[in-house]
Length: 146
Image 1 (cartoon, rainbow, N blue to C red):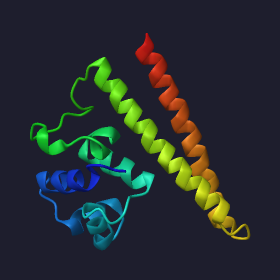
Image 2 (image 1 turned 90 degrees about the vertical axis):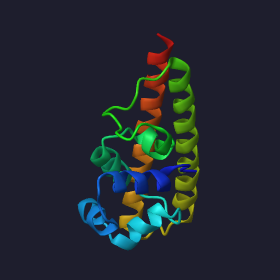
Image 3 (image 1 turned 120 degrees about the vertical axis):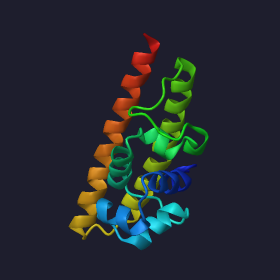
Image 4 (image 1 turned 90 degrees about the horizontal axis):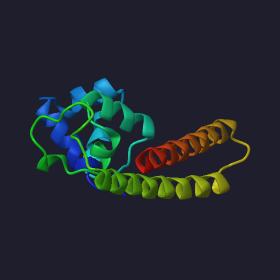
């Protein structure tokens, strides 16, 4: 579902002049995990996505959805100005991404070992994150309607 993430990570890393090893160290992950993110084999956890967006000074939606290669070589902090219709489109894409993540979470929750408290805690925290994300999306919709 993360359309351009792997391509964007690789492009942004190269623009900063970093090797996979250097970026992996900064993100506190292994080089092989970063390579998997860049080759579309693995989707990063949310905290890694947030770190990468902050590190490269791009929005999460630009990192995940946009095709950064078609944008100017230097991405500006906060991303380019967008029209209301484009913001609505991006918001819809984020809602779709959140829905798919929620379905995956529900599946994992149902199939998880109820005896493993660490797994249950992690799934509970992900569920809380999903609820907060839904509230943020709702607030964005309300702001766009003004």
